[in-house]
Image (cartoon, rainbow, N blue to C red; front, side, top):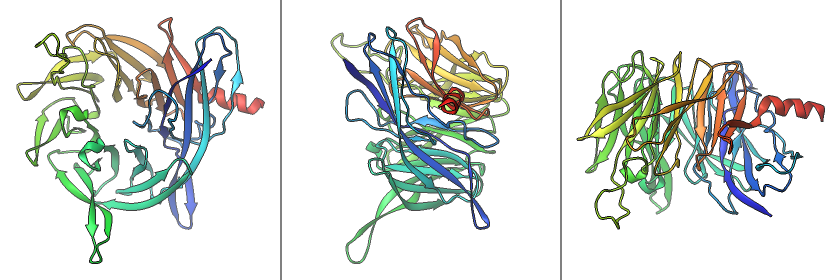
Length: 422
Protein backbone atom coordinates (compact mmCIF):
# COMPACT_ATOMS: atom_id res chain seq x y z
CA UNK A 1 0.00 0.00 0.00
CA UNK A 2 1.39 3.37 -0.99
CA UNK A 3 0.54 6.58 0.84
CA UNK A 4 1.45 9.98 -0.53
CA UNK A 5 2.89 11.92 2.38
CA UNK A 6 3.53 15.24 0.76
CA UNK A 7 4.36 16.90 -2.50
CA UNK A 8 6.27 20.13 -2.65
CA UNK A 9 7.36 23.00 -4.84
CA UNK A 10 11.11 23.41 -4.53
CA UNK A 11 13.32 25.69 -6.53
CA UNK A 12 16.91 26.74 -6.76
CA UNK A 13 18.78 29.23 -8.86
CA UNK A 14 20.92 27.61 -11.49
CA UNK A 15 23.95 29.81 -11.94
CA UNK A 16 24.70 29.45 -15.61
CA UNK A 17 25.60 32.19 -18.01
CA UNK A 18 23.55 32.28 -21.20
CA UNK A 19 25.26 34.38 -23.83
CA UNK A 20 22.90 36.35 -26.03
CA UNK A 21 24.70 38.65 -28.42
CA UNK A 22 26.82 41.02 -26.36
CA UNK A 23 24.75 40.65 -23.21
CA UNK A 24 25.00 38.03 -20.51
CA UNK A 25 21.79 36.78 -18.94
CA UNK A 26 20.79 34.25 -16.35
CA UNK A 27 18.70 31.15 -16.96
CA UNK A 28 16.32 29.60 -14.45
CA UNK A 29 15.00 26.04 -14.76
CA UNK A 30 11.85 24.86 -13.03
CA UNK A 31 11.38 21.21 -12.22
CA UNK A 32 8.63 19.31 -10.43
CA UNK A 33 9.53 17.27 -7.37
CA UNK A 34 7.14 14.64 -6.06
CA UNK A 35 7.86 13.15 -2.64
CA UNK A 36 6.02 10.05 -1.54
CA UNK A 37 6.13 7.94 1.59
CA UNK A 38 5.63 4.20 1.24
CA UNK A 39 4.72 1.35 3.55
CA UNK A 40 7.74 0.13 5.60
CA UNK A 41 7.52 -3.37 4.15
CA UNK A 42 7.80 -2.26 0.54
CA UNK A 43 11.12 -1.65 -1.22
CA UNK A 44 12.81 1.67 -0.59
CA UNK A 45 12.99 4.10 -3.46
CA UNK A 46 15.49 6.85 -3.71
CA UNK A 47 15.63 9.51 -6.38
CA UNK A 48 18.89 11.44 -6.61
CA UNK A 49 18.09 14.91 -7.85
CA UNK A 50 20.34 14.98 -10.89
CA UNK A 51 22.56 17.85 -11.92
CA UNK A 52 21.90 19.91 -8.81
CA UNK A 53 25.57 20.81 -8.85
CA UNK A 54 25.50 22.67 -12.15
CA UNK A 55 26.08 25.96 -10.35
CA UNK A 56 28.56 28.66 -11.18
CA UNK A 57 31.75 29.64 -9.46
CA UNK A 58 30.00 30.88 -6.32
CA UNK A 59 27.63 27.95 -5.97
CA UNK A 60 23.91 27.90 -5.30
CA UNK A 61 22.91 30.99 -3.35
CA UNK A 62 19.21 30.14 -3.14
CA UNK A 63 17.11 27.06 -2.54
CA UNK A 64 13.55 27.08 -1.26
CA UNK A 65 10.17 25.45 -1.10
CA UNK A 66 7.09 27.30 -2.25
CA UNK A 67 4.00 27.31 -0.05
CA UNK A 68 1.82 25.32 -2.40
CA UNK A 69 2.00 21.85 -0.93
CA UNK A 70 0.22 19.54 1.44
CA UNK A 71 -0.90 16.04 2.21
CA UNK A 72 -2.93 13.91 -0.12
CA UNK A 73 -3.19 13.48 -3.83
CA UNK A 74 -3.45 16.08 -6.52
CA UNK A 75 -0.57 18.25 -5.30
CA UNK A 76 2.19 19.38 -7.61
CA UNK A 77 5.33 21.44 -7.32
CA UNK A 78 8.37 22.85 -9.05
CA UNK A 79 12.11 22.86 -8.53
CA UNK A 80 14.44 25.25 -10.29
CA UNK A 81 17.28 23.06 -11.46
CA UNK A 82 18.06 20.76 -14.33
CA UNK A 83 17.71 17.02 -14.30
CA UNK A 84 16.02 13.82 -15.32
CA UNK A 85 13.83 11.49 -13.35
CA UNK A 86 15.07 8.14 -12.13
CA UNK A 87 13.97 5.70 -9.43
CA UNK A 88 16.06 2.91 -7.95
CA UNK A 89 14.96 0.01 -5.78
CA UNK A 90 16.84 -0.60 -2.56
CA UNK A 91 16.48 -2.76 0.55
CA UNK A 92 13.04 -3.52 2.03
CA UNK A 93 12.00 -3.09 5.63
CA UNK A 94 13.01 0.52 6.18
CA UNK A 95 11.24 3.84 6.33
CA UNK A 96 10.89 4.63 2.66
CA UNK A 97 10.75 7.57 0.33
CA UNK A 98 10.35 7.97 -3.37
CA UNK A 99 11.25 11.15 -5.20
CA UNK A 100 10.52 11.72 -8.86
CA UNK A 101 11.17 14.77 -10.99
CA UNK A 102 9.46 16.00 -14.12
CA UNK A 103 11.04 18.84 -16.05
CA UNK A 104 8.68 21.77 -16.46
CA UNK A 105 10.43 24.67 -18.10
CA UNK A 106 13.62 26.61 -18.55
CA UNK A 107 13.11 30.34 -18.23
CA UNK A 108 15.37 32.88 -19.84
CA UNK A 109 14.70 35.55 -17.24
CA UNK A 110 16.03 38.39 -19.37
CA UNK A 111 18.17 39.71 -16.52
CA UNK A 112 21.44 41.28 -17.62
CA UNK A 113 23.39 40.21 -14.56
CA UNK A 114 23.43 37.61 -11.80
CA UNK A 115 20.11 36.48 -10.29
CA UNK A 116 20.10 36.68 -6.50
CA UNK A 117 16.65 35.36 -5.69
CA UNK A 118 13.66 33.65 -7.29
CA UNK A 119 10.39 33.26 -5.42
CA UNK A 120 7.08 31.66 -6.32
CA UNK A 121 3.93 33.11 -4.84
CA UNK A 122 1.70 31.21 -2.43
CA UNK A 123 -0.34 29.58 -5.21
CA UNK A 124 2.61 28.73 -7.43
CA UNK A 125 1.22 30.74 -10.35
CA UNK A 126 3.66 33.65 -10.30
CA UNK A 127 7.45 33.79 -10.24
CA UNK A 128 9.49 36.84 -9.26
CA UNK A 129 13.23 37.13 -9.91
CA UNK A 130 15.72 39.81 -8.90
CA UNK A 131 19.22 40.58 -10.04
CA UNK A 132 22.36 42.66 -9.83
CA UNK A 133 20.90 44.57 -12.80
CA UNK A 134 18.69 46.40 -10.21
CA UNK A 135 15.47 45.03 -11.69
CA UNK A 136 12.71 42.64 -10.66
CA UNK A 137 10.93 40.55 -13.28
CA UNK A 138 7.51 38.91 -12.87
CA UNK A 139 6.34 35.80 -14.75
CA UNK A 140 3.01 34.01 -14.86
CA UNK A 141 3.54 30.25 -14.57
CA UNK A 142 1.56 27.25 -15.71
CA UNK A 143 3.35 24.28 -14.18
CA UNK A 144 0.91 21.84 -15.78
CA UNK A 145 1.82 22.85 -19.32
CA UNK A 146 5.33 24.02 -18.54
CA UNK A 147 4.70 27.46 -19.99
CA UNK A 148 5.58 30.86 -18.60
CA UNK A 149 4.72 34.40 -19.61
CA UNK A 150 6.73 37.50 -18.81
CA UNK A 151 4.32 40.10 -17.44
CA UNK A 152 6.29 42.95 -15.85
CA UNK A 153 9.65 44.43 -15.03
CA UNK A 154 9.76 46.42 -11.80
CA UNK A 155 12.23 49.30 -11.79
CA UNK A 156 12.72 51.28 -8.61
CA UNK A 157 15.88 50.13 -6.90
CA UNK A 158 19.20 51.87 -7.55
CA UNK A 159 21.43 48.92 -6.65
CA UNK A 160 21.53 45.12 -6.76
CA UNK A 161 18.31 43.54 -5.47
CA UNK A 162 19.14 40.80 -2.99
CA UNK A 163 15.89 39.17 -1.90
CA UNK A 164 12.15 38.97 -2.58
CA UNK A 165 9.17 37.88 -0.49
CA UNK A 166 5.53 37.37 -1.51
CA UNK A 167 2.84 38.33 1.00
CA UNK A 168 0.00 35.94 1.79
CA UNK A 169 -2.76 36.26 -0.86
CA UNK A 170 -5.29 37.40 1.74
CA UNK A 171 -3.50 40.76 1.51
CA UNK A 172 -3.87 41.04 -2.28
CA UNK A 173 -0.86 40.54 -4.54
CA UNK A 174 2.09 42.13 -2.75
CA UNK A 175 5.81 41.60 -3.24
CA UNK A 176 8.58 42.93 -0.98
CA UNK A 177 12.11 43.55 -2.23
CA UNK A 178 15.34 44.69 -0.58
CA UNK A 179 18.48 46.09 -2.11
CA UNK A 180 22.01 47.32 -1.72
CA UNK A 181 20.51 50.81 -2.18
CA UNK A 182 19.40 50.66 1.51
CA UNK A 183 15.72 50.52 0.62
CA UNK A 184 12.79 48.17 1.03
CA UNK A 185 10.06 48.46 -1.59
CA UNK A 186 6.63 46.86 -1.29
CA UNK A 187 5.08 46.39 -4.71
CA UNK A 188 1.37 45.89 -5.41
CA UNK A 189 -0.39 44.50 -8.45
CA UNK A 190 -3.32 46.76 -9.36
CA UNK A 191 -5.84 46.85 -12.19
CA UNK A 192 -5.41 49.66 -14.68
CA UNK A 193 -8.84 50.48 -16.17
CA UNK A 194 -8.52 51.49 -19.82
CA UNK A 195 -10.83 53.87 -21.67
CA UNK A 196 -12.61 50.92 -23.28
CA UNK A 197 -13.33 49.35 -19.90
CA UNK A 198 -10.61 46.71 -20.04
CA UNK A 199 -8.77 46.01 -16.78
CA UNK A 200 -5.06 45.44 -17.28
CA UNK A 201 -2.91 44.30 -14.33
CA UNK A 202 0.10 46.45 -13.59
CA UNK A 203 2.64 46.77 -10.77
CA UNK A 204 3.39 49.90 -8.79
CA UNK A 205 5.25 50.71 -5.55
CA UNK A 206 2.88 50.67 -2.58
CA UNK A 207 5.45 51.76 0.00
CA UNK A 208 9.18 52.53 0.10
CA UNK A 209 11.10 52.35 3.37
CA UNK A 210 14.37 54.27 3.50
CA UNK A 211 15.23 53.99 7.19
CA UNK A 212 18.44 51.97 6.88
CA UNK A 213 21.95 53.34 6.53
CA UNK A 214 23.42 50.41 4.60
CA UNK A 215 22.43 47.50 2.37
CA UNK A 216 19.18 45.72 3.25
CA UNK A 217 19.95 42.02 2.93
CA UNK A 218 16.81 40.12 3.89
CA UNK A 219 13.04 40.55 3.99
CA UNK A 220 10.44 38.14 5.38
CA UNK A 221 6.67 38.44 5.88
CA UNK A 222 5.15 37.47 9.22
CA UNK A 223 2.45 34.78 9.35
CA UNK A 224 -0.82 36.25 8.04
CA UNK A 225 -2.50 35.66 11.41
CA UNK A 226 -0.46 38.59 12.71
CA UNK A 227 -1.50 40.97 9.97
CA UNK A 228 0.54 42.56 7.23
CA UNK A 229 3.99 42.74 8.83
CA UNK A 230 7.47 42.59 7.30
CA UNK A 231 10.89 42.19 8.93
CA UNK A 232 14.01 43.53 7.19
CA UNK A 233 17.63 42.97 8.20
CA UNK A 234 20.42 45.33 7.19
CA UNK A 235 24.21 45.57 7.04
CA UNK A 236 23.95 48.57 9.37
CA UNK A 237 23.27 46.07 12.16
CA UNK A 238 19.63 47.00 12.65
CA UNK A 239 16.37 45.20 11.95
CA UNK A 240 13.18 47.00 10.94
CA UNK A 241 9.66 45.66 11.43
CA UNK A 242 7.16 47.29 9.07
CA UNK A 243 3.45 46.97 9.88
CA UNK A 244 0.38 48.08 7.94
CA UNK A 245 -2.01 49.52 10.54
CA UNK A 246 -5.04 51.75 9.97
CA UNK A 247 -4.27 52.17 6.27
CA UNK A 248 -0.71 53.34 6.83
CA UNK A 249 2.74 51.81 7.24
CA UNK A 250 4.50 52.02 10.59
CA UNK A 251 8.15 51.14 11.23
CA UNK A 252 9.83 49.95 14.41
CA UNK A 253 13.58 49.50 14.46
CA UNK A 254 15.74 47.22 16.58
CA UNK A 255 19.06 49.06 17.01
CA UNK A 256 22.34 47.16 17.24
CA UNK A 257 20.67 43.83 16.54
CA UNK A 258 23.87 42.31 15.10
CA UNK A 259 27.40 43.67 15.18
CA UNK A 260 28.67 44.29 11.61
CA UNK A 261 25.29 43.49 10.10
CA UNK A 262 22.21 41.27 9.81
CA UNK A 263 22.11 38.73 6.98
CA UNK A 264 18.78 36.92 7.42
CA UNK A 265 15.42 37.05 9.18
CA UNK A 266 12.72 34.38 9.61
CA UNK A 267 9.39 34.39 11.48
CA UNK A 268 8.07 31.89 13.98
CA UNK A 269 4.79 30.21 13.05
CA UNK A 270 1.79 31.53 15.00
CA UNK A 271 1.44 28.34 17.05
CA UNK A 272 4.37 27.73 19.34
CA UNK A 273 5.29 27.55 23.01
CA UNK A 274 3.43 30.06 25.17
CA UNK A 275 1.07 30.82 22.31
CA UNK A 276 -2.04 29.04 23.56
CA UNK A 277 -4.53 31.23 25.36
CA UNK A 278 -4.71 30.80 29.13
CA UNK A 279 -8.32 31.90 29.22
CA UNK A 280 -11.38 29.69 28.87
CA UNK A 281 -10.23 26.02 29.12
CA UNK A 282 -12.57 25.18 26.27
CA UNK A 283 -11.15 27.86 24.04
CA UNK A 284 -8.74 27.17 21.18
CA UNK A 285 -7.85 30.82 20.83
CA UNK A 286 -4.22 31.65 20.18
CA UNK A 287 -2.51 34.58 21.83
CA UNK A 288 -0.43 36.49 19.31
CA UNK A 289 3.06 35.84 20.65
CA UNK A 290 5.13 37.30 17.86
CA UNK A 291 8.66 36.00 17.44
CA UNK A 292 11.27 35.99 14.74
CA UNK A 293 14.89 34.90 14.44
CA UNK A 294 17.83 36.65 12.81
CA UNK A 295 21.35 35.70 11.80
CA UNK A 296 24.29 38.04 11.56
CA UNK A 297 27.95 38.81 11.07
CA UNK A 298 28.54 38.40 14.82
CA UNK A 299 28.21 34.61 14.32
CA UNK A 300 24.97 34.64 16.33
CA UNK A 301 21.38 33.59 15.86
CA UNK A 302 19.06 35.79 17.91
CA UNK A 303 15.42 35.32 18.89
CA UNK A 304 13.26 38.44 19.13
CA UNK A 305 9.90 38.73 20.88
CA UNK A 306 7.33 41.51 20.92
CA UNK A 307 6.49 42.72 24.42
CA UNK A 308 4.44 45.82 25.16
CA UNK A 309 4.57 46.76 21.47
CA UNK A 310 8.38 46.77 21.50
CA UNK A 311 10.82 44.19 20.13
CA UNK A 312 13.26 42.75 22.66
CA UNK A 313 15.98 40.12 22.47
CA UNK A 314 14.60 36.94 24.01
CA UNK A 315 17.78 34.89 23.68
CA UNK A 316 20.86 34.44 21.52
CA UNK A 317 22.13 31.14 20.16
CA UNK A 318 25.88 30.61 20.07
CA UNK A 319 27.18 27.74 17.97
CA UNK A 320 28.69 29.11 14.78
CA UNK A 321 32.28 30.32 14.42
CA UNK A 322 31.73 32.55 11.38
CA UNK A 323 29.03 34.73 9.83
CA UNK A 324 25.53 33.26 9.92
CA UNK A 325 24.27 33.43 6.35
CA UNK A 326 20.70 32.18 6.72
CA UNK A 327 18.12 31.14 9.30
CA UNK A 328 14.87 29.25 8.74
CA UNK A 329 12.16 28.68 11.35
CA UNK A 330 10.38 25.37 10.86
CA UNK A 331 6.79 26.19 9.85
CA UNK A 332 5.05 23.38 11.73
CA UNK A 333 7.15 21.99 14.57
CA UNK A 334 4.04 21.79 16.75
CA UNK A 335 2.46 23.46 19.75
CA UNK A 336 4.99 22.14 22.25
CA UNK A 337 8.29 22.70 20.45
CA UNK A 338 10.08 25.00 18.06
CA UNK A 339 12.83 24.34 15.54
CA UNK A 340 15.22 26.65 13.68
CA UNK A 341 17.89 25.82 11.10
CA UNK A 342 20.92 28.06 10.64
CA UNK A 343 23.84 27.95 8.22
CA UNK A 344 27.15 29.74 8.22
CA UNK A 345 30.40 30.49 6.51
CA UNK A 346 31.88 27.99 8.98
CA UNK A 347 30.40 25.33 6.63
CA UNK A 348 28.02 24.01 9.26
CA UNK A 349 24.26 23.66 9.46
CA UNK A 350 22.82 23.61 12.97
CA UNK A 351 19.25 22.71 13.91
CA UNK A 352 18.17 24.42 17.14
CA UNK A 353 15.44 22.62 19.10
CA UNK A 354 13.22 24.05 21.83
CA UNK A 355 11.06 21.54 23.67
CA UNK A 356 10.30 23.75 26.67
CA UNK A 357 7.45 26.18 27.18
CA UNK A 358 9.57 29.26 27.77
CA UNK A 359 10.83 29.78 24.22
CA UNK A 360 14.34 30.40 25.61
CA UNK A 361 15.92 26.96 26.16
CA UNK A 362 17.39 25.91 22.82
CA UNK A 363 19.54 22.84 22.17
CA UNK A 364 21.91 22.85 19.17
CA UNK A 365 22.11 19.81 16.92
CA UNK A 366 24.81 19.68 14.25
CA UNK A 367 23.21 18.50 11.02
CA UNK A 368 26.39 18.31 8.91
CA UNK A 369 29.71 19.97 8.13
CA UNK A 370 29.86 20.75 4.41
CA UNK A 371 32.80 21.27 2.06
CA UNK A 372 32.22 24.98 1.58
CA UNK A 373 30.24 27.95 2.86
CA UNK A 374 26.52 27.21 3.25
CA UNK A 375 24.40 30.03 1.85
CA UNK A 376 20.81 28.99 2.34
CA UNK A 377 18.53 26.65 4.29
CA UNK A 378 14.81 26.14 3.74
CA UNK A 379 12.21 23.88 5.37
CA UNK A 380 9.44 22.25 3.41
CA UNK A 381 5.88 23.22 4.27
CA UNK A 382 5.47 20.29 6.68
CA UNK A 383 8.74 21.10 8.45
CA UNK A 384 10.31 17.64 8.24
CA UNK A 385 12.69 18.04 5.27
CA UNK A 386 15.44 20.67 5.10
CA UNK A 387 16.97 21.84 1.82
CA UNK A 388 20.56 23.09 1.97
CA UNK A 389 22.61 24.90 -0.69
CA UNK A 390 26.08 26.38 -0.66
CA UNK A 391 29.31 27.35 -2.29
CA UNK A 392 30.26 23.76 -3.10
CA UNK A 393 27.68 23.79 -5.93
CA UNK A 394 25.63 21.15 -4.14
CA UNK A 395 22.00 21.01 -3.04
CA UNK A 396 20.95 18.35 -0.57
CA UNK A 397 17.74 17.38 1.22
CA UNK A 398 17.86 16.19 4.83
CA UNK A 399 15.30 14.34 6.96
CA UNK A 400 15.40 13.22 10.57
CA UNK A 401 14.89 9.49 11.01
CA UNK A 402 13.33 7.59 13.89
CA UNK A 403 16.83 7.07 15.27
CA UNK A 404 16.94 10.84 15.82
CA UNK A 405 19.84 11.17 13.37
CA UNK A 406 19.73 13.40 10.31
CA UNK A 407 20.01 11.59 6.99
CA UNK A 408 20.65 13.01 3.56
CA UNK A 409 17.80 11.72 1.41
CA UNK A 410 19.04 13.45 -1.74
CA UNK A 411 22.62 14.39 -2.55
CA UNK A 412 23.70 15.94 -5.81
CA UNK A 413 27.25 14.55 -5.79
CA UNK A 414 25.94 11.00 -5.41
CA UNK A 415 23.41 11.76 -8.12
CA UNK A 416 26.15 12.57 -10.58
CA UNK A 417 28.12 9.44 -9.67
CA UNK A 418 25.07 7.24 -10.20
CA UNK A 419 24.22 9.03 -13.42
CA UNK A 420 27.81 8.51 -14.64
CA UNK A 421 27.61 4.76 -13.97
CA UNK A 422 24.34 4.50 -15.86
